[in-house]
Length: 207
Ligand SMILES: N[C@@H](CCC(=O)N[C@@H](CS)C(=O)NCC(=O)O)C(=O)O
Image (cartoon, rainbow, N blue to C red; front, side, top):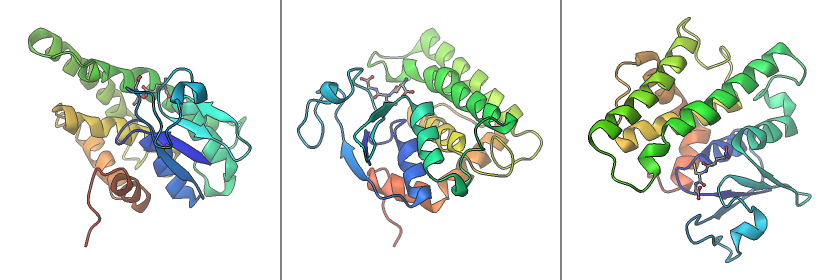
């Protein structure tokens, strides 16, 4: 398999999951602005929408969209338990969480990455948008569960982690959401997460 990724972008969720699975994979650092892959290909000929992640399967299929890529990876190794079995209520809960992260939490960060200066009212509005979505994560963790679906880490947690981790990067405080802060720290400490962050150049390997 090959993962087209951009350092620290949402594609890091799939990178974390590939590490969690101990899968054999290649990485291709892809510049979504120039549209060039690390291997020098035109990324739009691989994935016409031009954004990451794009996963190339061993049979050469291209899978895009975070919820689809993440579930595909989990389903390759069902024994790893990174997604509940298809057809169960728990699987619907996973899809509910993935879709929330994708269409609500992830997109609430869009104003910070638009390339335009974000200040004053516009910034306040954007921060409030992130805060409302973080409040939903906080409510999901209210019963003391370690992860979004309960006590088991799933692909939705990898995706939620990557997006929530952007808060620090764009200077949005999560102090009003202490369970969410602990959740982010818990996932940041997983060996698969550390490995992905080191490989993407976001942190240094501990001595
Ligand atoms: N709907 C897509 C959105 C992916 C997305 O927003 N990717 C961002 C990085 S987090 C990207 O590649 N942006 C560059 C661009 O849109 O040109 C998904 O869920 O996979």
